[in-house]
Amino acid sequence: MEHERILCIYDYLCRYTNESRMASIQEIQEHLAANTGLSTVSALTIRRDIERLTAMGNDIRRKNGPHNTAYYGLVGQGFTFNEIRFIVDSISINRFLSPMQKQKLIKKFEGMCSAAEVRQLISRISLNGQGLSSLDLLENLDQVHCIISENRKIHFDYGKFNTERQMVYYSKRRDLIPVRVVYFNERFYLKCVNAETQESRTYRIDRMKNITAGDKVKKRPELPKPDGIVLDMFEPDYFESVELRVRRFLLDDMLEQLGDAARVKKESGNTGYVSVRATIGISPGFFSWVLRYGSDVEIVSPKNVRCAFQEKLKTMCSLYQEKNA
Image (cartoon, helix red, strand yellow):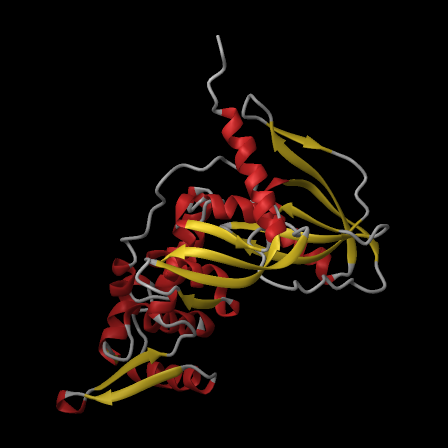
C-alpha cells in the first residue's frame, strides 16, 4: 500500500503540476480519495512521501501561498514540453508507422505531460499524401541494431514490388556484415560490407524480412569515408570537383544541399547566376539531382561530367521525338 501511494502521488505531480502550476496537500488528498480509493491519507504522510520522492532525485519545488499554505510542483521531468511536442510531431509524420503504432507511442509521451499540456498535443502534424504499406519498421530496426551490437553477420529476404503492386521477397545467400543504420531522404537504410569481396551494399530496412543473425565476426569493417558530398544513398562511381552555374534564387537550396564544402562566386555583371563549386560524388543519383532543377542549374565543369550529362539528356530527348508514321 505504501509503494502504491507514493506512485500515485508521483503520477499526480507528473500530470497536474509544473513550475508554474503547483498543488497543495489538500488537492493531492482530494485526488487520491477521488481516483485511487486512498481516502485516509494524512497531510503529514503526503509531506513525507514528497520528501522521499525528492530524495530519490525528483526536482519537486515548494512555495508558500496565502495563509502559509505549501504548494508543490514537479519540474525537470527529463524532457521539456517543447521536446516532447517535437518528438510527437516526428512520430506523427513518420511514413512507416501504422496509425495504431503512432497512437501507442504518443500515449507514452502523453504520460510525461500535464493534463493541460496533453491538450496542446492534440493538434498534430499530418502527412500530405499516402505512402505504400510496409513491414513493421520498428521491429526490423530493433533486430538490425541487436545484430550490429553483437558483431554478427546478417541474413534476410529482400523485397521489391511487382507490376501488381505486390511485394515479392527474394531469399538468397548474403554473406554480409552489417555496419551502420543511415537515415536518408525519409527512409532507413542498412549499410553492409560483403565478407568475401569487401564491397559495400545498401538495403532499405523496411524491405527486409525474416532477419536472422549469422556467425560472429572478429572485427567490424570500417566504411570508407567519402571524398566529397554524396547526394545519393548509394556509393558514387567516383568524385570530382564540379562547378555549377546556378540561378541566384536557388543559392539557399544549393548551400543546404552541399553544405559548408561549397564555394560560391558571383558572376560579373547582373546575370542572375552564381557559380557554385564543390567536390561531389558522381553517380546516377547526382544526375537525377541536377535534373530536378531543369534549366536553372548547368554543369560547367569538368568536361567528362558535363559530357556524361549531355549523353543522358540526349537519351531522354530521343524518347520524346515524334516517330514517323
